[in-house]
Length: 316
Image (cartoon, rainbow, N blue to C red; front, side, top):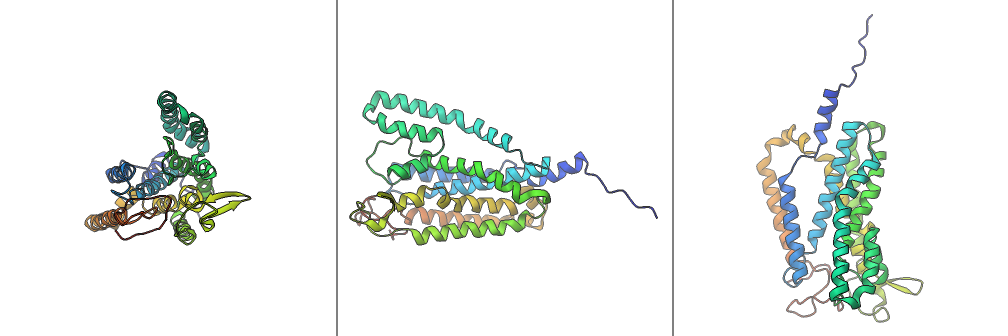
């Protein structure tokens, strides 16, 4: 009895599979980025105008997790493997030139107009060069909520978190995809989602909501490494593990929400329903930006103070 030889994958069939997870241009993501940028800019201009504008950073983390994971899945489907060297090289080519140019210009400007701050800037440049700005700021106690300091490179903490994720996540995805490829990736998404929720809950439970003063005044607002106080709010806001919640949430979405796959499923006819859901999400994000504080305001007028008290949500 004759048996048919197993069908071998052809370049055409490989291209079809790669189409399922390839990353197309998504205008909606540009819109989300624009909203996030505006929220963060307003927050930094005057935090009392939009006290929750810092949440735009979290939106960026979700988008980054989604795009990077989708790129890795598409590469696995297209090439049957993930090239760590090529992945890291692409990230370096995209980010390092602009980063180094920016730090060089900031250093020159500081040397001319803020020469007294050169000593402090030296540490920021070193940390920015090695993408460890978040951990450096935690260690020296000059975190995101520090006030009155000249720190033009403080914003590099978020880039450091993303780069540390870029360093480790491709290795994780190699094991997740393994020999089975992308056939079971949707099953893995539930565990990534659970991990994101677990991190969020842990941060909420660990968050210190009382007054924040000097370590000898409010010792419960700090963890201690030997005789060195480490601010809890700095660790929770800046550290890589505590900021993985949003990134992993985006990664979980990428495993189940691949644009071309959705376009070939029954969900392709549910555009209006998704538009309503997106509008609801936008309204919720706006409400959170208006009502959520990284730290509580000092006065009833809601002028924000970073040294008096901290809270998760304060009524406006």
